[in-house]
Length: 242
Image (tube, rainbow, N blue to C red; front, side, top):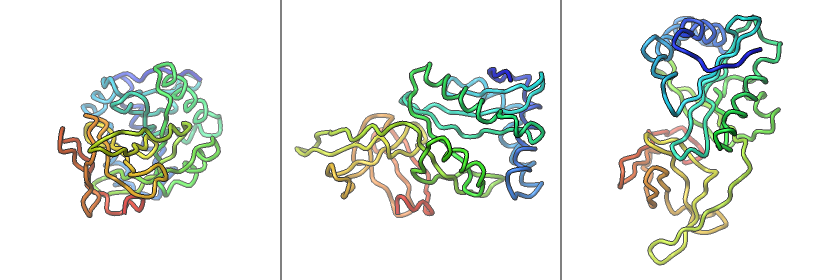
């Protein structure tokens, strides 16, 4: 197996792998799968992905043929990354490509000094969830991804060792930023901030974009930073924040 950075010329192969992988892994309608693959990997969208500085888009070839790919986005603070998708063409499953490609992603991130890898997989994908658990990942929360216009729940898995709480003095008191409890915002991550080291009382949220505190969440789960406008979309289904 050879792993390399995906190029614009790989667009059709990536679409084929994604479509066949989704068909094999999920109980989604053919129309939903086709629409989703075109939404994510049409020529313009795909070209933007492989050109992004904050994205690691790797393609694996087996016997000279494109067989699998991963899509990973680096957090704005450049200390962590989210593995958004790992797709293996059904014709090449059972050859260990998924594991080897996953290791390649992790190794390349470590070379960049990125030590925290968070995996995202649809909750309905039992094989994908087992893949992370077998590698020592722990489920730390849930997220959401839009597929053909409809929201689907993702399970979030964390690999890195806990970084602990960062004390921060504000308004003549000390609060604690939990760098392990994060969610992606429009311009940077949000971290839960606790009033004490026991993590029993929430103080608010820390914006990873501008380093400000006390960003509030509304009843629907929306967070918006009052300093820089970084925001997290409403996630009313997210039990971790209800």
